[in-house]
Amino acid sequence: MKELLETIENWTDQKKPFAIATVIKTWGSSPRPVGSSLLVSESMEMAGSVSGGCVEGAVIKAALPLIENGAAHQLQFGVTNEEAWTVGLTCGGKVTVFVERFMAFDDRPEEQAVWEKLHLCLRQNEPCVLLSKLVDGKGAHSLVLPDGQTVGHAISEALKKETLRAYGERKNQVIELGRSQYFAQIFPRKSQMLIIGAAHITAHLVQLASLYHFETIVIDPRGVFANKTQFVHPPDQLFEKYPSEVLSGLELDAYTYAVILSHDPKIDDNALHVLLKSKVGYIGALGSRKTHAKRVARLQVAGFSENEIGRVRAPVGVDINAKSPGEIALSVMAEIIKTKNEFL
Image (cartoon, rainbow, N blue to C red; front, side, top):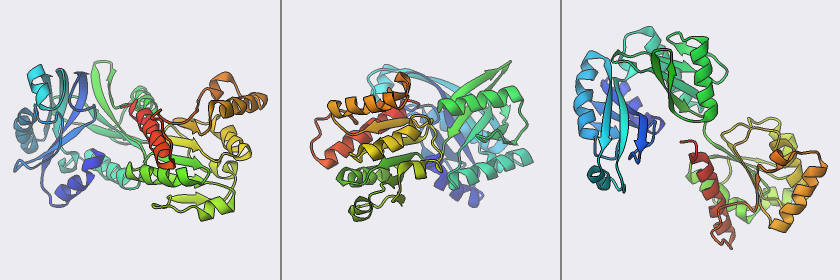
């Protein structure tokens, strides 16, 4: 839904009712991942996709009456091998799609409150989970924030706990509680890339990270590096401080990816001593296997466990036989994207 926000805003501002279809379950080689959405207006305007083309027609047909009556409905499809080839797959799969009129056009105050808060979260880069009750008929939504606050229809403590578990797992998923089912759609804040050390590789990595919508933060206490590195695309934040002075004030959660590039053990270790105790989703460190072995020895002396040290990916990046700074940055970006997408 997040990638369709501009269209959603335009259609709601124009008071143009529409339905939203969301992939809630997949089996096999489904064309689109769980959480993918398709918007359908009364005049059959479309935005987004739930299958790459092979079931859109049936979804649109089911969506049109729901726009008028405000109901919701689950649709199940088996994507055959023949259909799968038309969308670039080698084999078929199954997909369940939940279709409903968009909540902004619901008169109930709970639904209006959910849309207002969800819209604010998406615009201000604040994390949240949209909880949709999977029932045929009148839909119901709640918004759950990472701190446990809720907006919209009241939910039980057990359901809130399950929703926060899904948020921690970073996976859009169906939650079953008693005889009820809910779809938890995760909207994390923008992924954050921490780069320790400013150099040629850093400049290329910041440019790539920006291309893939990461917030970039570069930290280097060495003024000559922090201030003289030529960035084609400047980082969102640049700190001329030791990492520990900066990291303590940042949210080091699963949506944070850290790359150690300084080549200076004093700076590298200063960062690692904080990062290894945090919940960041990725830690990569530049250097040869010999360099990393020395790094491991220093961390062992500092009291870090084998599991903690094992979180460091070194040599950093996907092995593409990279030689130039740009190629090394590409290999690092590829490994980070691979790590991020393991949770989709």
